[in-house]
Image (spheres, rainbow over the protein chains, first blue to last red):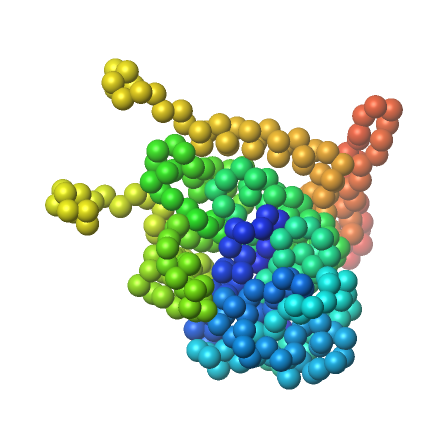
Amino acid sequence: MAEIIVVTSGKGGVGKTTTSASLASGLARHGKKVAVIDFDVGLRNLDLIMGCERRVVYDFVNVIQGEASLKQSLIKDKRFDNLFVLAASQTRDKDALNKEGVEKVLKELADDGFDYVVCDSPAGIEKGAFLAMYFADQAVVVVNPEVSSVRDSDRILGLLASKTRRAEAGERVKEFLLLTRYSPQRVENGEMLSVKDVEEVLGLKTIGVIPESGDVLNASNKGEPVIMDMESSAGQAYDDAVARLLGEERPMRFTTVEKKGFFNKLFGG
Amino acid sequence: MFDFLFGTKKNTASIAKDRLRIIIAQERSLAGGRDYLPLLRQELLEVIRKYVNIDADAVKVDVAKEGEHDILDISVTLPDERASAA
């Protein structure tokens, strides 16, 4: 059975696509067979972040409408043979997706021996976001340590607990928080909500804390998920998050201010 | 003393946390806040099952309106003692 993970947030621009690309690549690096699906019909971007934008021939909507087979539409990743991207349609609107179609695609992936399906949700709480979460077994709620993002995440948590297949069956979707754009220095200065603050407000555990890092932009410029850059703190933090998703216990890194030595301070480290 | 020398910096993170706590509690308790019912039901089921082995559909959770108040109506059907002993 394929494990279905939705990456969602409510608010836009918090790092859902960056997170989807990195989680999918990280799971593939662990040898899992992974598909990552862009549910943002009309505003596709996962293909750019994964670096496969010029190889999109058929997309998710083509498969659902029966215009192409799933096999024709899955784009094999350049870096991992066991990772596939299903792009969103750029020309259709969100009504082109429907529950039955999505279910059929997910079932076909499970029958094809996929271990994980990562669903990259669009922002908002409309149809695309609803369909991305409906069949999920697990949810990674991406949140910035900032008031509007935290509030929107709570809204999404409410929907995960009521408007999903699992909720309708009296079960629960396994939910995790993933904090992005975290700045330990600003937390220490009392200018930013801490991991603990966000966990307390939302009543949920964190699976990863991604520090604010210029490497995220560099990675997206290149079309390479930031998790591939294991020199960067963001890449390492995503790698930790993937390990935790797979049940490994790892201590949180990059959540405290690095104490610079006297000489580093003098010469700007 | 140091505040006097360096100027007081307001801890805006704690203001953010307090504001979020209030607005989220309020939003969870509003109409849309009923979203928590399936989860509450599931958690109740898990707790009760630590003591009594009950069916998945033995716990019912509902909200009823009585006058101006909302009543949280929870009912749990326990298994038949003799049936389970047999």
